[in-house]
Length: 416
Image 1: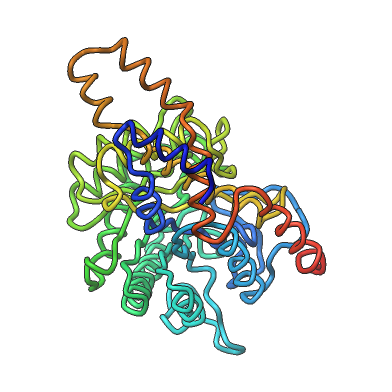
Image 2: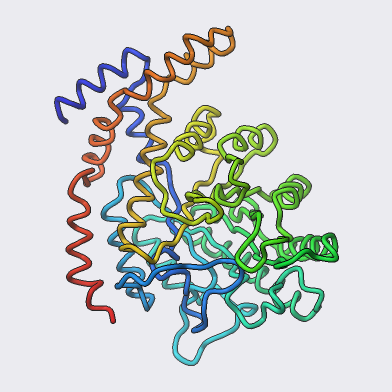
């Protein structure tokens, strides 16, 4: 334990904050690590391009090409990140034995057995996402909203299969599985019918979640988006649609991706609003830049505000937190690690804030002092507490990028 940490501990103690207790708690807060940063959302069940309203840019060398390579990269990230992680998979990351390929509507738990083995060996839970994109049966850009009944039913069956796989994950790991439904269905230009696709989407999700499952083990979510690439004028899964669906269907959670709203909207303000009504909510945490939502997470203002609201609302056990971004223009291990560390720094900063004192000032209308105290908090020695957290978790704040460069030289650079 450093002298700097002892000094920071004393400073926070004057505000009634026990930094030792905060560090111990932060160690146990799971953050779900998205596998798709490692291979640019390609997956293992198709050879075609990434399609369906999303896009990865860049061609930095070292992309994972096989399950073994992707798992090795994830292991490297785990070694560089302090605290607890979960694993977040997309259905397109199914692993097939030779000659045993099946289409997405026929996926089974056995196609993810190697992922379960990987997660259990590392004490991790698994979250899951049906993959409603990058597939030839996305007809005219539509999946669960398609007016073609055969197309729609194919994707409903895919969703049902994912419910079964999600329960398998939860039973095997002993940790609930958050299963998130997101589709890129929409139209490039102004549609003639906005309601029809949404009614089909509603019916499709209802059919998917009707698949028998234990709600204590499987947490179905619905995620919205403003628009996607090629569907700029209309997306069926708007914020109003998904939020209302979750509010009117038992045991369905709203999932907010903070890159999926208009540029002037902030999810930090939405978190306490939803917690007034929902026992649990889910987040995909990213960084939006103008219209693009999937930049590597940094310790910016909105990231810190989102973490603050979770902590202020005493909701660390009510919010499922997962990262979601993909950048192929930089070292992928670095991208993963920066994002994980940024979110955990944001949580630490929030947990080291004297929220009750600040709330009291607000309730007493002491707004001048409230402003002063909120500004003072920004200059408290957060970095010294973070260093101690890293030390206790077996890593450091400085020096981890040297490990990334070594891994790139010894492993990533040899992938052609």
